[in-house]
Length: 253
Ligand code: CIR
Image (cartoon, rainbow, N blue to C red):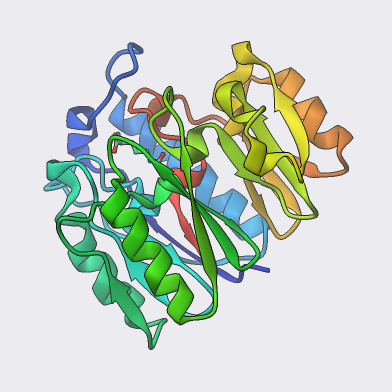
């Protein structure tokens, strides 16, 4: 169960965020209202929310998920792979020190975006990507081992982050699309297959039994509801324009 989340309000410079999507520039005001709805949904899932102020120095700073891996035993502050995002960790570390007595750090030459890390109980799958390198993944695993948790490495080719293509919904259910569906390491889970034309919906988040899903993906909604979950649909069009999605917008713990 999660009881808390940390989010950061999108900043005015959000249109300068990193993107590979060809969907145009995000609208700041729409992003603000979509973010407000996101926070309301987290509250409906029973979470106490810490809302950090917008930070114009970091256009991508609303995607707080990438800055830390939160485990039941420690927080691991990442070293984000993109140069323009590295400074995001400074304030996140301060905020997390109010919640965690054990704080660990990923250090150069290791880089990690926590969007590449999926928690399944006390095991963590770590995707190697343009943002997370092998050295960063090894540092994460060695920290996890010190706290009696485990980690393993997953390689992939097509998406930005591991959790762009796979999401664990608890109870052995795993949402997956594209190259992740056939991965040997995921075959022990009940795979809920997201079709290629709805692959963006793979980035959903299960919070205390409720699944937040992006609005506009009806086949994925019915697949997830068919597995017994209630869902909350949220419009995240402005975050999608920056390759971001539902999981990226919060740190849940
Ligand atoms: C970036 O490229 O870093 C941001 N524009 C999007 C980050 C999305 N984060 C995530 O998937 N965890």
